[in-house]
Length: 391
Ligand code: AMP
Ligand code: MG
Image (cartoon, rainbow, N blue to C red; front, top):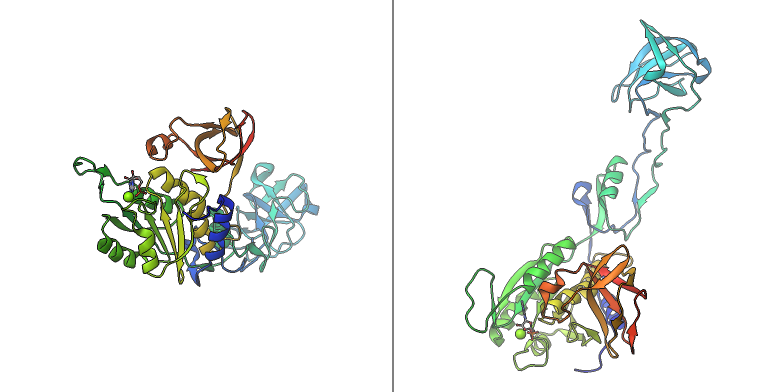
């Protein structure tokens, strides 16, 4: 293995090569989770008209308190025809247009209704009126380019009359597991075999990133079979492989990547777990060769693949988002490698789970965080600040 990159250098290399895909317009109802390619602006003032915040009567505040003649009715979707003059009131429901001439709405609880006359208590100018444009003015930016569209953005943009938004295309991602020992869960295991979990793990992680993976299955450590599967996988925007990138005689992927025209960007990151991670590019396709130990796959995805996906989707800041926390217990550091320690984070306190070896995926399932422990001498004391990635 050539010179190892630090995690930071490897993240930077990934970001450098992961460029946004094309732009396309998406209906707002389908836009959740996409990244805006252009600023999205309100199409109308919101509210589009002065509207009532209450059921009650629209009045001139100067006429209150007093007895007023009811001259009309304004319901949601059915504005009153009348223009309000002095001494008059219009019965109004929540969300209805406040008629011209009125400057306040008095809630029904503060009104006595007597036939076509209402006796109203005093009300201040502007009371219970939601002014036109009070939420947003037409043309204002609701979501900036590079923002991932959250549910709140969907609601806001739809309310402001936006039917289509310009977003970056989401990358197509292919997933391929390698290893002659792998069998699908549910089948019987012959001696030496294990259940294949990485493609399912990766597909689930991809789903958490809003991407439906094209899972190409598990391929045995056979050159011809692997080459054929890789050629298929290289048609995607991002190819994720697991296993076969280490230094053993059955680790064929690096050579096959070379033969298939993938340019190596790096192989080997000074981290634990997941050191022999490979990253390369072939034209627009990004290729991640994740080491096969399941926890290495998990960690490699969270640090590098998720970052790449965010960058491909045009997110302004795609890098891993470490959450600040404090160690609950002292922790020995690794002198050479940054460690991603599986931990349980609660209330800002980060407690490593037991079983930190890279094959221990079941132990990792007890964790909800990958704590970043920078390489160095000695140990970190309890209470020391650490960053973690929620998982
Ligand atoms: P490798 O990176 O191919 O040397 O694999 C390292 C370890 O991870 C070996 O113990 C493999 O059996 C195991 N492994 C590789 N791929 C998978 C997979 N898809 N699911 C579960 N374990 C795997
Ligand atoms: Mg293998």
